[in-house]
Image (tube, rainbow, N blue to C red; front, side, top):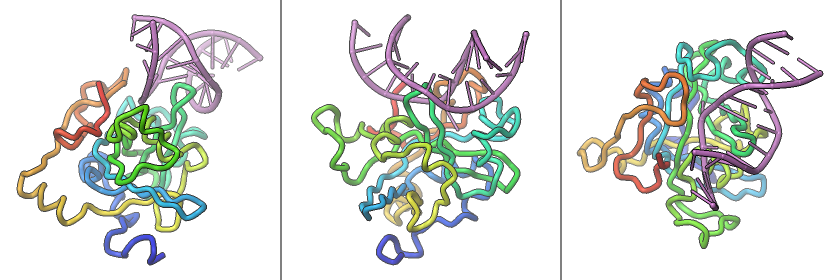
Length: 205
DNA sequence: TGAAGGATTTGT
DNA sequence: CAAATCCTTCAC
């Protein structure tokens, strides 16, 4: 375990036990860690996220519990991964208390290193994980990772913002922008999307 | 059991 | 702006 992450930087399940609208902005700047079976690790900073809550018509759990959204109804600190448009996966972090179905959609990350399977000739490096479908493709996240515990040694976990990033936020050197969410047909006016202002790795549209 | 449509991305 | 592509949900 020690070789993956020091204990102070790992984000614990209790950190997710808040409304998604609180977790989403706090997730910006945190590090998403992808851990592969062969031991390889790919890290990226979260630069864009959206919140989905129980009384939100755009939330997959808005109507009722189903086989697909079941993990959202469980305890916080797990992944919710689903297939969209038959060809892309989206990664969510399950938030809020047990039985309160809500999640944070990770829309973009800025990779620290580019995995070997990415063809950089086809795309600028900062765009590789700019978009919810693209980041899952880049980090090889699919339905097998649905319901995973976000814990060291598992396929995915999160680490807190670096002290340097937090200082930049506090000093106003960097800032977050809050806007409406993207690609929805319901709940279009809720301003529950946050991203790192001026970041080239944020998704388009 | 079938049809409609989606928290996307890409190319025309 | 439409295609790609398939799973989930809801209606019958």
